[in-house]
Amino acid sequence: MTLLTIAIDWFYVTEKILLISAVLGVSLVIAMYSTWLERKVAAWIQDRRGPNRAGPFGLLQPLADGGKLFFKEEIIPSTANKFLFILGPSMAMLTACMTSAVIPWGDVLTIAGREVSLQIADINIGVLWVIMVVGMGVYGIMIGGWASNNKFSLLAACRGASQVISYELPMGLALIALFMISGSPSLKDIVEQQRESGIWNVFLQPVGFLIFLICAFAECNRTPFDLPEAENELNGGYHLEYSSMKLGFYLFAEYINMFISSVLMATLYFGGYHFWFLDSLGLSPNMVTILGMVILFGKTIMFIFFFMWVRWTLPRFRYDQLMKLGWKILIPLALVNMIVTGGVILYRTIGF
Amino acid sequence: MQTLTNRAQPVDRRPMTFWEKMYLPAIAKGMGITFKHIFKKKATISYPEEKRPFSPVFRGLHVLNRDEEGRERCTACGLCAVACPAEAITMEAAERKTGEENLYREEKYAARYEINMLRCIFCGFCEEACPKEAIYMTETFAPSNFQRKGFIYGKDDLLIPDPKHPLTVTKKD
Image (tube, rainbow over all chains, first blue to last red; front, side):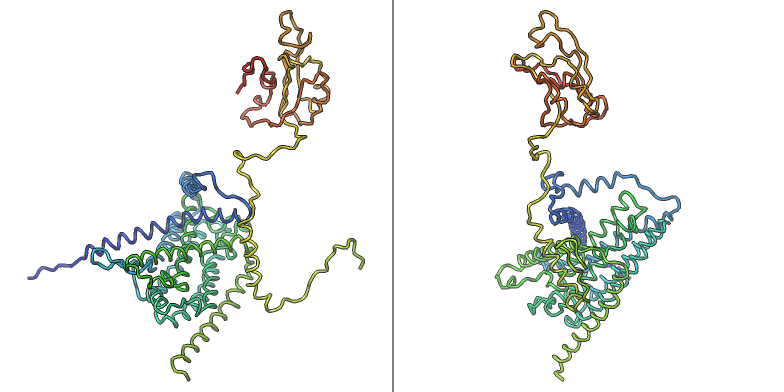
């Protein structure tokens, strides 16, 4: 009788656990400071100063906000479905955090002779995973809105759900055109392909990027598409009945989503951790990897700033305009983009 | 149609061109405007550290003046109370005793002099009415308080410090 042994590579397990904790920690911290940056950007654009009392430059403001949310009274309406009421924000937070698993945060680090990939899971359906998880994010909104047992929450949740579903279609179609170029839905492959050719996908797919950008705004429920939580129209939105940290989770999930969308846009269309001449500088591979990571975060922060900049510039869409833009403009545009991309690829491979 | 002013502009009701219907140029323009505002001078000032100057005619909290020898100028004539449209000023007169000549300038003085800062409308009529140049309005305003009685300012609060004995004024909470 042979002893059945399962070989567990403990180094691998520790590495992944560390990576997961790091990614989770970083996305939470960035989401936290996005709230600060959002208020600062809002203030700057409106000729104000923004939070500057808590700590230097108001940097402790997010901690103060978080502490405030924790100490608020937790109210669960008596007519609400208690289980689903708690499940809603948990779901929103869970789906927001799950997306970061497939994003390549950098290339390979060599630590003590071992190659450590700075990606939690390089699954070959990377982008599809992202779309799936983002699609699941609707449940957070829908469950929360429905479980509140309040017609306004429900209305807002319906608006949110239909908006997210409508904008997922052009987003997926825009990505199909991208896959045609890269030949793989794995995010790592997409980045490596951009790195090898040195041409970022945004130059090959400008229309696709524009569609993806607009859809990312809609998916994150950001202005000009923040109809689910249009605070001055719906007195609150789908989180109307929520208080304390459950409300905090919803708001926080939005910021994590924004961070993830920014990373995704940087990865898919702006070359991820690639930057020109970085590979030819003659630095050690580990240094290049770390610099690449910094570059990815730089790109991400630019996108986060862009999100905020747009928020404080554009007014909100009316609901019919939102639907018209999604179904009558973006989907046909994405289809045309897909067909043109396919045609060009066919022409370059076969040459007619 | 005759316009009322020469500033009237006819509304442009032409249908939008394709370029305008794309909205993106307009959005880019708007974003340019908001981006410029980031670098503009901020309209807000950091209040407790920075304060805006008052105008020279600002009328703030009252003070009761003393003469150059440190004696109270107020003779409790009551003209300020009569002039006050908000009826914020109350006073009680008393007669100066011998030996108090260094405290009060004339034979009569205000034993009690109160201004209710919640009633006061800071019109400055008391200042104008005073024949003895005893009441003046300064450039400070009433600080917040938790109780109404904290806004009734007595002689302790109103009298300026004695130039000879600077620590005679005690501020109540």
